[in-house]
Length: 189
Image (cartoon, rainbow, N blue to C red; front, side):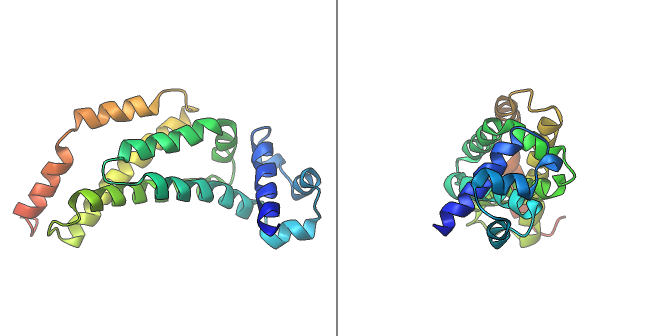
């Protein structure tokens, strides 16, 4: 029952996010939509930003669990962009709000975890210095994050999956060369 109430609150807020900007969503509107009282809302969430955090975080965690595997960087990106397209109005309302920072925080985390999982599965057994590993992961994390932010800024108007696939095609072998340099030039020389 408790889990069902929490889910109902999240569904209600998501429905409202698809209809209006974040600053026009109130606890009062959510509890009326769910048929619960304010105390019940506050039992699960301390405020609207905490609720928004859960709405963003839970699908992100699921995508990472289900898709961040060795050969599925594209698959993971496809799942994330499909989720974004499915909830385009809600995401754009969050992205354009004063609470944008938490959305960007989760986007940064998703990019880092996707790249980390991919890197570990692909190159984890190789004797690469931790500093080099960190530099490579941050590089690809920033590349993914930058692509995602430009896409969001455009209002999700273009096919980011096709653009990303083309980018990977153009850069084929680049990651492997970086790893090879880590092995042949371990001291950075």
